Image (tube, rainbow, N blue to C red; front, side):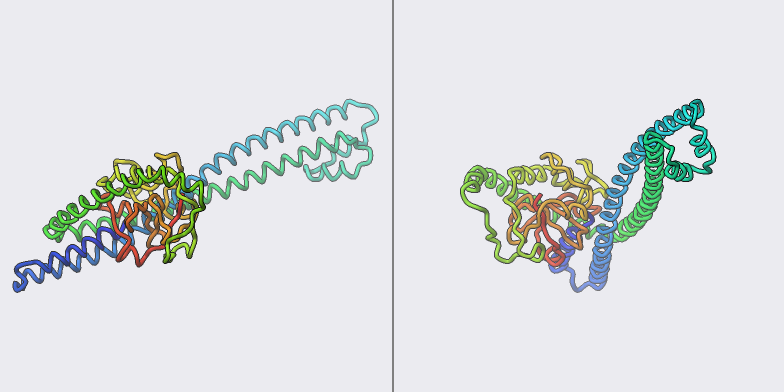
Length: 372
């Protein structure tokens, strides 16, 4: 997910850097600092827009894959219906030959040969008292399978049209993302010197957060056996307190044992570069990271933050546990909660998988959480 982590954190660090700048009285330096602040503000806005664009692209991809699966299933069903229709028509043809060759069936044959269409043939059969139950059954089978073929062909037509529209939508979203990325790169290139200082400070901060997370994960893994035993004795209750603003008092089921593994796995990918559409250790976007990490514990999730919000059970903010999914910015961004009011996520282009706190911008755009 294109995320505010970088803009929000970098902007904060940048303000601190400006506050310690030694040449505050130099008009040229002050002007450069003001320019850099303005540029970072623009980058922040671009990242917000990109977040939604990338996840909209991912959501369209999820829908397109489903439509393609439906197309494949519909095509297979159409072939079955056509084969059934062919067999029924062959049976009808055989019956026509039998009537032609038999004696005393000329009236029935005239009914058949006088029909102008399949529907007319059925009507004629139904009104002819001389037609046997076998003939009626044969005709009804032909009619039923003929309707199935037509209905399946209509479903295929609509599915193909939907798929074509989704392909166009994804192409437009891709073009929008690429255009915004180009603008972002151009803006950042104008303040490369300042960015280098900020990246160094952020790297030091992430190293410290990593150490804290490693210690927390180790402690959680030690406590897991005891918690598993206690959960079989007494029910889990919400000890959260504030309930958050996403899940309004919802208390999800007790976290499964895999939750501690999810955090440990996610920790391995800290530092992996952000790549929109990415869902592998070569590069992740926000929902791609979540999908990949959960796949390692045997849980299949869609590659879309919007779709992921529909998975699992809602959890109140006060009841968050490591491994829960946390969502921000109108579902435009998702991460994995690791405890300590922090989460691991793939923020945005130009950044890497990192740890961020649910504070500032993230707290203000927090949507809710899900327990998978």
